[in-house]
Amino acid sequence: MTQVSMRVDEDIKVQAEALFNDIGLTMTTAFNLFLRAAIREQKIPFELSRNTNAGAMATVDELQAIKEFEDNYEENSKFVNVDDLKKRINMMLEGV
Image (cartoon, rainbow, N blue to C red; front, side):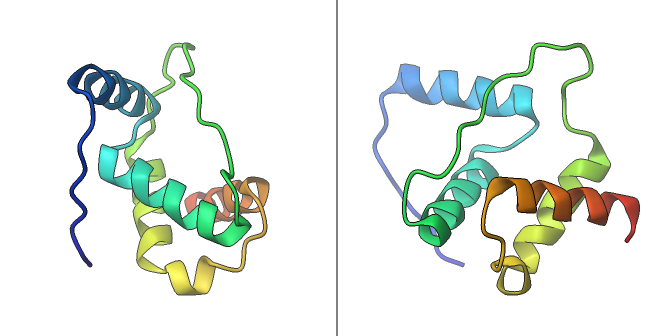
């Protein structure tokens, strides 16, 4: 692992942290997901949006599945799109 340092407008950082928190991600996890998908798809790959439904926060199991996915990135890098990624995370949550 390496550390990345970047300059970001304070207001943008605060807003991004609030958004990612609502989705159930840390800034680091969101940034890593973005970079990996961008490299795989060779473009800005997806859009995350705030879900305002009650209970929209990621569960501990969902966060663990995301962590497992990141830890096993080489094995999981074969996904072509976000839908495949979602299917794999759901499979991990179901213990398949």
